[in-house]
Image (cartoon, rainbow, N blue to C red; front, side, top):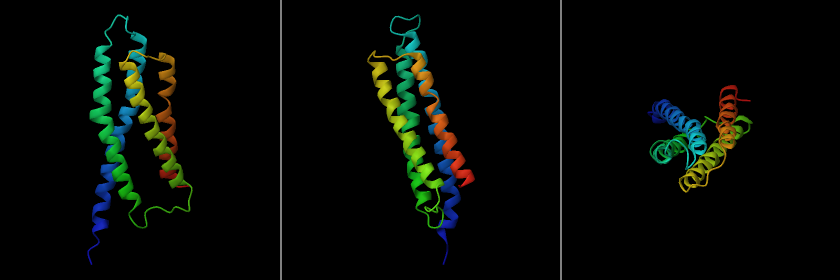
Length: 148
């Protein structure tokens, strides 16, 4: 019998990595846009309308589809028999990290709407929040590579 899973698995894994890279790029960049947006303010030297457009398009056109593709391809990899040993710690760390990334994504979407409405937080707050995806990425990548 032909093992179609063995044939498809590397392609699914490659697609997953590409989706993750796209999602992470957005998660790194959107809070940086929030910093610039918050620091310009409604009365700042630069109009904030361009930030609203950039933030919206980044979230809707790049980040949301990439997040969905990451989840679908990731779940397809997890459901492939023999790939994940759930008795180890690493898949749980990765799962918690991905859920954390998703919560951060949702936070970004809410902040984007707040900024669009003129309710900005400080640039410092957005700078600090910009570190969250980095910390989650470190945990996820370490878990997947080291497999502790």
